[in-house]
Amino acid sequence: MFEALHVACGVLVYGIPEFRLPKAIVAKEIETLKALGVEIRTNYVVGKTISVDELMNEEGFEAVFIGSGAGLPRFMGIEGENLKGVYSANEFLTRINLMKAYRDDSKTPIFHAKKVAVCGGGNVAMDAARSALRLGAEEVYIVYRRGESELPARAEEVEHAKEEGVIFKLLTNPTKILKGENGFVGGMECVEMTLGEPDASGRRRPVVKEGSEFVLDVDCVIMAIGTSPNPLIKSTTAGLDTEKWGGIIADENGLTSRANVYAGGDAVTGAATVILAMGAGKTAAAAIDEQLSK
Ligand SMILES: Cc1cc2nc3c(=O)[nH]c(=O)nc-3n(C[C@H](O)[C@H](O)[C@H](O)COP(=O)(O)OP(=O)(O)OC[C@H]3O[C@@H](n4cnc5c(N)ncnc54)[C@H](O)[C@@H]3O)c2cc1C
Image: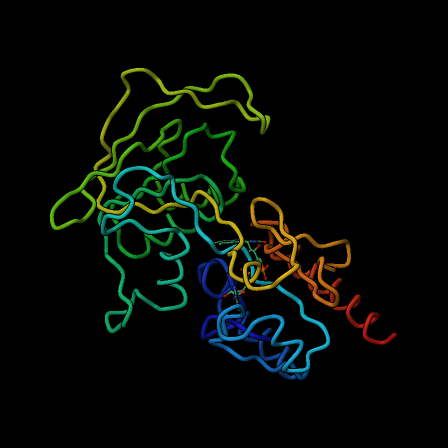
């Protein structure tokens, strides 16, 4: 297993917070894998440290499974996203979960904000908001452009966030992040929204309410509006077909357009669930076993 980071296990270690998935459980799973004979090589960025072709042609691997996830964060493209105190949810959660930025002696510290806006309404947004509260923020807002019934997060996650004091600014859309002192965030300009007719996604389309501009008083903004697969492996593996949005194209066994190269999990489906990713890994493993046993 070739892992880009210094710890294996993907979102389970760097994304999902300790209060939802204790890292000791994940560590036990890794130990089980190692006991089965899996060798884990960390700090290996496939596509940079070594390519898929080098793995197969020079290192002697007969098959490759790509499970590189969908860790490339999206931003809104609004003014002020480069200010200090603006994070992608991925960066924010990775700094906390993997790099232990909450510790005073952390080498990769995090800005301890007082008022935090999390843009987005999915499970990742809920995790970022609840983590911000645990870091000591006094006010944490979920800023989401549709209403409560359209929130993509599971109802349970929303309920827990509310119980812990996260404030929901629904039907609200950020338009600009304002510059405060020393290049830090000094607030976030927003507009109120109403819901119009259903759009292509089947959900009612948010429409800006005329004259509803207001400034949300925050010193940190976390973007949790989705992620997509990182293009590195695709761009360094000739003949590996991908969808327009970056997902690797694979058949029901995980086989890609390249012989003996398989893929599964978020890298194929886009951001989905742990159980689907694990299922894809097992399906591909069986297919690889069959293929190599021929
Ligand atoms: C904050 C958050 C909360 C979530 N909560 C839940 C939840 O409660 N329940 C649920 O079912 N799902 C949840 N998910 C989704 C779930 O975590 C993912 O669907 C799942 O982890 C996908 O697994 P994967 O193996 O495909 O990718 P990942 O878990 O993303 O793992 C990919 C791994 O590949 C590595 N990698 C990437 N590129 C390279 C490269 N070029 N070379 C080498 N290594 C590389 C990455 O560092 C990473 O370790 C959550 C996601 C996030 C972000």
